[in-house]
Length: 384
Image (cartoon, rainbow, N blue to C red; front, side, top):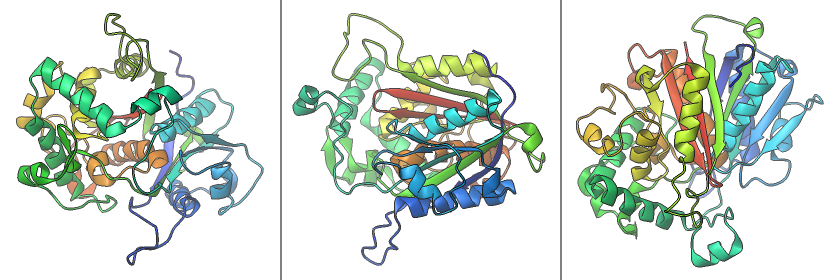
């Protein structure tokens, strides 16, 4: 895989993920308010003006037609190409990859990747399946994760308590993150006393939906205003599913690589690094058990090993490989278009030493992984 010229992060911006529906004393903000707020923060950190941005890629899922244009019109319409990206929960990292490629290929020097969302309220029925599969219930995400969790338990010996420990860890980390929707730790008892949503998964095994915005400005090294603590993109990879690993399709008799494994292997090849080189990781934890198999499928530990390492504190702040240091989706919340960019931003903050009370000492390289319906799998590796 060819990398092209070096691409660096000029600045990032992030809103708090929350419900901005104007109800019960909460402020009313639309996706374009949240998206433009994040973009302005990124410009400020980069020391750039809007006129320096040469192209923009904007990720969202439920915002409708021309959502990127509506968001950017709050800042200034300068005639640049604005591309709207819908790629389910990996929309933001897909926008990031497109921005990265534009700079690496020397088509543009300064490019914006933004993600934002105002989430519909209530249960989300994904349309990422054929109609007959939706009719049968394949698009009921908690149920799909519950079935995968049962299989994972059968294959590895993992327990529901292991899943609960993921929730406890991430909510403990989230308590240190002022941008997280949930900033209160939970106990194992509280997880087990929360209501069942899809056997064996309970409410506190699931991430909360949220509204929010995130933005990352990428550029060539010569356009960077300050080279102090410079962060370089070591890899940006996007893969899709393979036959045999698609919800509602494929065959258990045909063994093909999982898209998570494919994306991680491509990222290792592209960056020249391996799992043993990572100092900090953002794993995709839309449901608690997903974090465990996510880490295993990326090769960060062996299959079936993640639950034991979790129990030993391996993935905690202060552990050998801290995972979801900002609380992950389980604490931060999940505004689909912004989520994967927020993961990337957490890695950026960590390796610049700017994560405050959740800082991983000496972090120099980190990985962010997101999944999306399709399926899609996106891996980004940043380095100092």
